[in-house]
Image (cartoon, rainbow, N blue to C red):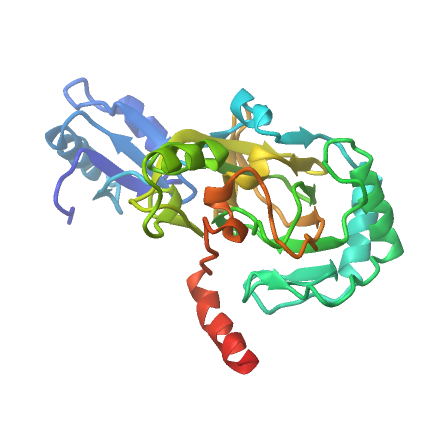
Length: 357
């Protein structure tokens, strides 16, 4: 028995003989205006619920089962390998084939021969100064452990790409393993923990990365937003910034409810590519990986994800005064943004603080 009619029908994706049935129905049966598939279902859209109901009746008469009325699942946004001009101007670059296929295999072998940390939902490895996901900080007093030889050589190579504002190679590297369906929430890397410049190498599989520019409601972001706030009499309290409706980036800024700018993009990170953030793309653009098992690539369609291992290269900020970037409203070191932890880490952070006290 069908549920309450809507103008959308949902069927199993691999319903037998469906395509033949679509062409064999009589001319009096309404035709769908859209026909698209997700991983499990096929969605047929009609102009009205009555048309969808008539079409469903015709399919039922032909023996089709498991038909229901529903709204279609949200289709993943198409992603492209081309960096849009607004992100390129903000300091973002993608260096394709940064390592060869043979180098990729050797790196994965070295990583898998090392011990994995399973304290969060994905497996990680940390080299150099260890970043604490619970407190969003690191041990400033401890010296940076030396990177292993295979990783130190790669860090020097990343420095040599010429796209980072560093004088020395990265002294902190985080390895993340993403299995199909895994992702990471939209976020901006903590200003107070790391210098300008971040690089991430993708191994094993590509994936889509979503970017959104963070803008304060009272007039822009960074230095421009600060000037506008000052002209308006200053801020009286914090507000939460969001990179997408309902997706917090874990920072606060200003006095009124924050809002999102129109600047959003979804990029495809090919296997063996190096993505580099510096300047505005590091400080005022949130980035995240949607949690799904594949992505829609312009020109190629659905691309299933495989195991992806990323290596993120950073330099620890050891300035006692903290970050002095030109984006004070987004910077916790300058009294703008404050670090808000993901829900699953808040209790851990409170426990750490209690033991420290």
